Amino acid sequence: MTIADDTTQASRPAIDKKALLAKYIAERDKRLRADGNSQYLEVKGRLAHYLDDPYTPRVERAPKTDHVTFAFVGGGFAGLVTGARLVEAGVTDVRIIEKGGDFGGTWYWNRYPGAQCDTASMIYMPLLEETGHMPTEKYAHAPEILEQCQRIGKQYGLYENALFHTEIEDLSWDEANSRWVISTNRGDRFTASFIGLGTGPLHVPKLPGIPGIESFKGHSFHTSRWDYDYTGGDPKGAPMAKLADKRVAIIGTGATSVQAVPHLAKACKELLVVQRTPSSVDVRANAPIDPEWFSSIATPGWQLRWLENFTANQAGGNAEVDLVQDGWTDLSRRIRGKIMQLPPEDRTPMKMLAAYEDSDFEKMEEIRARVNSIVADTEAAEKLKAWYRQLCKRPCFHDTYLQAFNTPGTRLIDTDGKGVEKITEKGFVVAGVEYEVDCIIYASGFEVGTEYKRRAGFDLVGRDGLKLSEAWAEGMKSKHGIHVHGFPNAFFVQPTQGANLISNVPHNLTDSGRTIATMVKHALDVGAQQVEVTQEAQDAWVELLLTGMGRMMGAPDCTPGYYNNEGQDPGPAAKLNVGYPAGATAYFKYIDAWRSSGQFDGVAFR
Image (cartoon, rainbow, N blue to C red; front, side, top):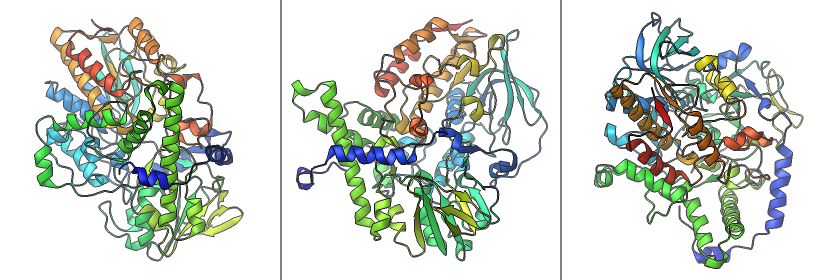
């Protein structure tokens, strides 16, 4: 993707900004709901079968009652990169506890047809240099990402001590012995000197709260538990031949559906794509990676250079070149280009914000025009246009999603922002019309806006019985997003209150893993029994965070979605869901110097 040239820009009609903003607000208002996140169903009780693991059989084992140096909750990228860094530091006694049947986290569960990363493989897939793996394409598909997770687990010996199909029931600090006591649903009760938590937001599936959802007599499943026994095919792209005589509905048109719909369109007798809000779908331009080219750039330190280059281009840096060249860096280049067109004396915050807005308007007009150029049915094309700013919802990039609506048998069922009215025994109802189908696929995503305790499945209990839910009752409070006062020897691996680089989350996780491994090794070297951020240092970090610009996603005219708490006021705690005020590039430089100094300012080793 490149910035449009001056000729193209000059030929465009002028944008009526006032009318466009009015359209954005009108589309938002259609979709506003008072119930916010409560509109989604928690998958439990009679809905619990949607959580069944269709990929790996559960293996019986004896309960663990031993002690490990480091226990990590979550076997996705966070657990894998932290475990790998610990092993590199000489801490090999690492146990990962994972509710899935293997490593992978989101990529263990997401095996729907067409699943692939939305950020370029070279920077998205962790530890490529360490494992010697060359991605096969610019945007790797799910099987390759899962294989990379397994490759990390094997190379670093993380399988030997791992507990799969296991969920934490209680995780409490034992002050007298300076260790954590861990109880699970498999009867385990073991201890660990240190713990890490990388539960993430993308592992608890949610279902839309549509009346009658349990009444459907046909077949149904969630995209994170794809039923290949029913559809035929496999995650690697084999045809879903069993759908050839089936009428199928997929409810939801977010990033998952954008990837799955093209495959379903080719397989089903009839496919109904049920839409409440369209995604913005820009060009992806996926392509194989040339081995000869890769060998020329894969010199020592190559992945870190690519990570830093992406962050500098996408998150406010001043990189002279763009190694990644994707939709994220394209957006940033456009914004910088607009701002640089301003005379120096006009680069005030207000005028730079206006330039940012102009760039966004132009980009979204291009994305809407792309729909017209691809979708033959003019009525469907109009309904597939995204009427909001690009970062109101997760931007999508795909080269065959819009084209799928030109496939015979594929129909868009647009609900005009209202959603499905009800599920019946035979299908679903939209605007009073019942559509009979054989199968309903719920592409409704994962829980993001729910409280941490609900997503994790347990409440961490620290010193003096302090629960994490109590410590964070008024919002997350930490230092670096890693250390929380009152919870010694515990480390959180996630982006918030650190770099907060949402466009490439694995960069945050890999860097945090390096910090944790450095600190654990130091603690073991000096014989420290406890590692804990001081209250003063935590307070100072939170105070620093609040000097920044605040949350950048979810403008008031944004259509509801998980980026903006479904259009509801997220409350005062949300002001703490931010990152380092100087930006991601500056944070990574800061934290590297902080850990490399060996002083670990603000953290006590006792």
